[in-house]
Image (cartoon, rainbow, N blue to C red; front, side, top):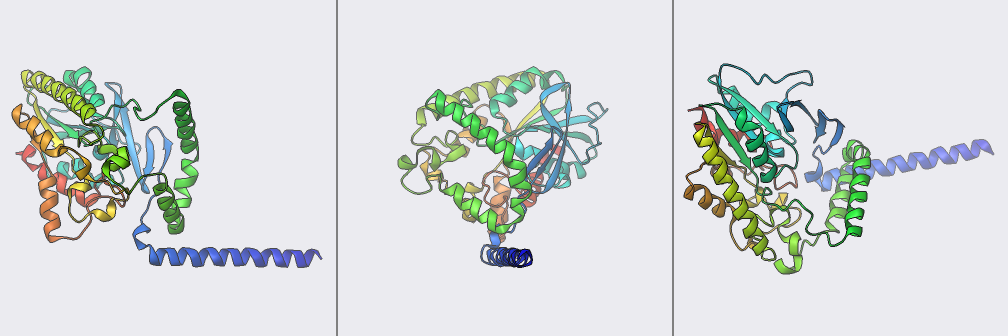
Length: 356
């Protein structure tokens, strides 16, 4: 009797695994666009795995809220050399989200340079307010005459950062609980389940069920532009957007004046987003629409920079020229915000004038 039970048990186990193999094989064949590496989890404060790639960072006592990415976990950052510095300060794009260390835009630039010490400091999720505070309270005392500071602007930098979409304290508590739950399960979900194309497809379409991906701009509200709601003056949030942009402009002007007095060269590096490119609809899984903005965020930013004589680098031109003759995607799969290794190369190419 026990033998029969074991035989049936192993038979069903075998059938189950065969079913899984068949489902996985069919998924990889039909949904080939999901056959990318999406393993993503935190090991410790200095080591994250993002899209299957190790991201090692070092923190420094001089800079409390930002870190420096390094190639190997035991590498150190030398902040004091006799060379003039080009200091990049930004968010996950400057971190090199999902690309190898040697493929980041700042490291590609560094390989072409022998004159300057190139440093890149960043953190995940920082906004313009965070970065301006770091510059004013920390960096301005570190950089010296003849150095160059490059602030990497992201179109999600224009933000309230105070959860304005949450209506009450109960919702806020629920959000915190969900954040904890997501954080506690992310290692299991992203280390193990994302090996499977089938599970990636399930997660992809499950996520879409919680978003308003269809309808008019007003019906979709914040889902129409997502993280770019305020930078592109979403038709639901024009007044808030104007206030945030005005605050951004005022602070940017102040910092430019401070840096100019110290004879520090200041640039704004405008990180492109895939929505600005014609052939990247495949990446746009949430169906974000720039047409749902009352103003073009890029043109508004360029106007601010030009009117205030603030120097800038705009890699979008390089991106657009590239896509005219190539069909290759320049951003990570289903990610409108983070350039892949090709995108980082184009950003590096557009920064060549800093070396001159």
